[in-house]
Image 1 (cartoon, helix red, strand yellow):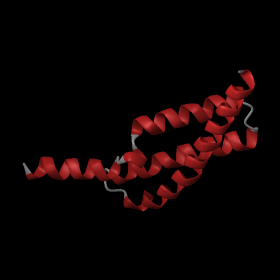
Image 2 (image 1 turned 135 degrees about the vertical axis):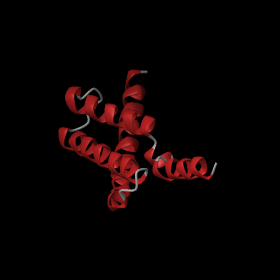
Image 3 (image 1 turned 45 degrees about the vertical axis):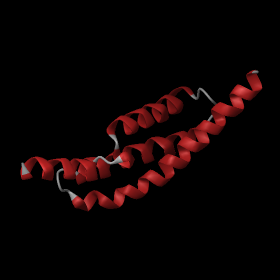
Image 4 (image 1 turned 60 degrees about the vertical axis):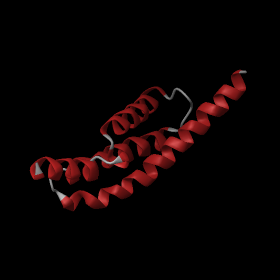
Amino acid sequence: EPLVYDAFNRLLIGYGWLGNPMFLAGLTGLTVIEWRSSEFGVPKVIAVAGVISALLSWGRGIGSAPGMYFLEPLIYANVPAFLWLGYYGLRIASSARVNT
């Protein structure tokens, strides 16, 4: 049983809510879609910054679970990723306001 608890603790630390693979998959998908199609008018530079920060955010979650702790500093990539997501939400809200 200690082995099971240790494995769970590693997964919980490595794939916590900031490194949740489902969240990161969705965020990465959104950034790539916006970069390719510019659905909500996000400038290309900001869209590319979103893609880069989303991809860097994967490094912390993937690195922590197997013990590659040198990837821990990539947690700071979550800051621009969350800022991009907030900006994207504002763009969606302003687009919805214009359309109603």
